[in-house]
Image (cartoon, rainbow, N blue to C red; front, top):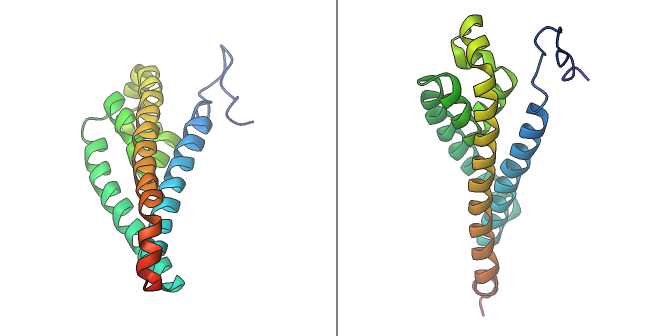
Length: 159
């Protein structure tokens, strides 16, 4: 309900923009789907469950950690609308900048007031682009899993 605060004509700024909930929900679904597909791929290749879990967690921490370090450097350099469009490409920057968009404008209230509407639109477009890109990655990994499933099972069983 706190997202609706500030939607009236004479209200103060809302705590979170109303579209942020939808954007974060879409992004969390695709981020989790990437994690599931990577874990499924690793579990098919390794023979032991504990090894599969450790490898997949390590791979996800490495991938998302590197993406976040690169993403923070890229998002914080241009600021404003460009940063809002790029932020959804990595999990941690998307959460941070969608929940706290003022950080895109160097915590300047005047710069935020001027560029807030453009940043909102850029964040929506960035979310759509990130969701499509992650979906493409998910589908390509999944199609490879389906295509090579029989061969992987035969290798593991020794036949």
